[in-house]
Length: 158
Image (cartoon, rainbow, N blue to C red):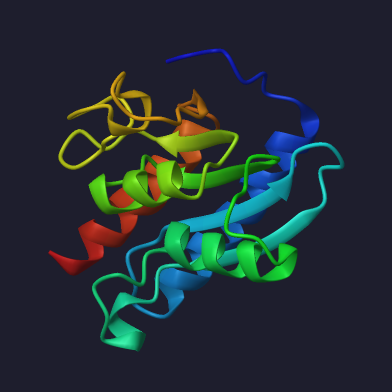
């Protein structure tokens, strides 16, 4: 875990909002992942999203991508350097690449993903030294709550 992003009350509240999105995803039979994009300076929520892969029939409808798209639209700019992405699960390679391309200032996530996580578990794409942008990263925020949602979801599917 990298403690470069402090866990402020604002970040904890944002993670609780992301967890609400994840619960809504689970209720819609989607993998329970939720994301929130904050204006880092004000703590205002710019966007929120949940996984929608099954509903959209689109493998790219991950919560992170949907939230980043909506935040970019809200700001009228693809660059999100003054934003913090808060997500319940460590981003995969696709989402990690989008985080870098969107120049997100900070990433905060809940559960680590030992199978597909690309922000410290399987690999660390967001902090790769050859890339031109590297966000601050903090993993393990409300980790137990995030992991429990995923474990319960997959236990029901087995």
